[in-house]
Length: 138
Image (tube, rainbow, N blue to C red; front, side, top):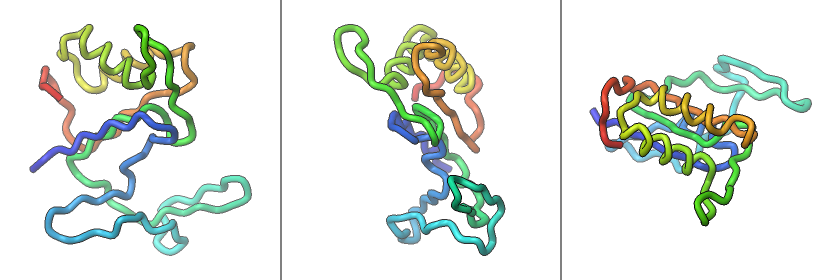
């Protein structure tokens, strides 16, 4: 019944919640088990190693905003006389410029357009929760 919305302005942050399960009732291990070949849904060849993900169901009501794709780095840059993460700066800029009246997908689209050609990173939005249709304070 609660939506978890996470913002990660860090290198390799895309898919930052994949495999994370949050529960108030059962204690969980503090690590994600390494991928296995048993029960694998997808396999991928990466630099001579085969990686496989165990079958997993994405958690409901989780929203991840990440500064970049899983294989990218997130830049820090000098904006308005101080250093900020490029993702964080552009997120706040879009939210202020649009008075928080856009859907999440429109926000990330605007951010990508502003950052394109200036930064090598591509901000990501991953969600299983319903998209907001109207302005809602985040």
